[in-house]
Length: 155
Image 1 (cartoon, rainbow, N blue to C red):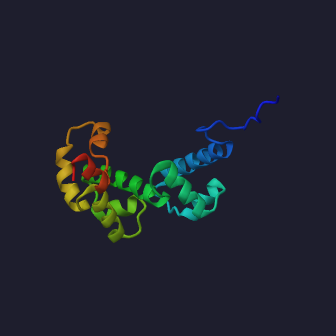
Image 2 (cartoon, rainbow, N blue to C red):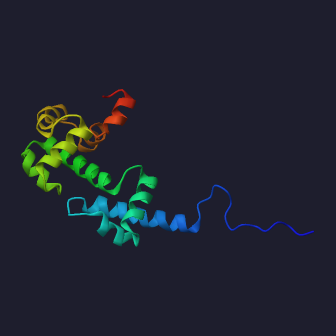
């Protein structure tokens, strides 16, 4: 009597292809974290990962819960929040400093993620975090998407 053939993977374990894709996705995410203020597009990021743009978008969303574009914008908004808290730059200056090319798009995405327009945030949060160490201010003011805020009771 012969034993049943053994498969290369056990149920529930990632395949070698999935592990390779995850490593490539990590490279993409690291590139976004490092170069968020530079012009980034899905096609260029897909080249970094040696994937098609569609495949990158699907796999990135599966791995990180949001599209590459959304992740880029979240990083930009996080940085914008820090710059606005400092209070020494205008909203327009912050918009361009974090890599956005449209003040309208920046303001819309900022309001979606933070729950208030950038000008109001600058006025309110600059005073609220005065004297607070930067690492603490960053942690307590991290943007939360509106649907997450509602689930947490913050919206």
